[in-house]
Length: 299
Image (cartoon, rainbow, N blue to C red; front, side):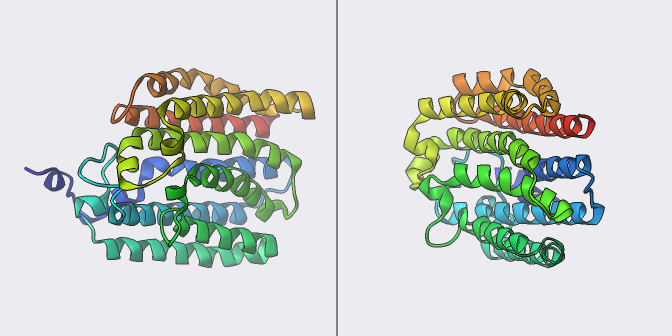
């Protein structure tokens, strides 16, 4: 039996596969952290927090679907793919259907965003439009960001400062220095997720002309980049304590226990074995975010 046949479950399961559910914590954690800051500052607003979470997940799923389609069409996802299965590449769903689903996700995020704009004003309008355009432009359009080495910057900005501070803003409707500070390590670990993904695919991406930062830097420098991102994320709470005098985020240091495995794999492995490092980094990001939020709430 072919691999496609083995991976062709029911329609619902196929679409669930297309959303990449294991990656969605990257969208949940920033909203959780931003909401924790709002709670600590006495500005928690449940409906806005829920709307921000739904919009963030819809934009992330839409971005994943656009990526699924265009990576296949541009030749980056082929039978040689080393990562988790992609529905377009396997022929489970047509490219047109995947793009239509992505458009539906973006449209639903836009509708939810209207409520958030009504609450948060023009800054949320700017952030929302930028998020939607960047979600498509990540792999779509005439100049896809991921194909020009800008994916790492995109992920850090939109899954770090933009998401954390945006989630806080729609509740408090004001800037928060604490939200700005704690958004940085969240973005660093989100970027580390992409670094592992791109390190795994460096050979196939290079052949397809997908000039990710990993392709441009090479494998050794990309491994160093991953180590720097993770190290910086864990050094940040200490810096926050020294500079600002707030040690509430130091609870996130408990996630250090989850660092060793992914770091060892990234430094020693290449290709498909890095899927385990990707899963480990996702767990690290989630644990760090939960502990960070709890520390903010109890600090």
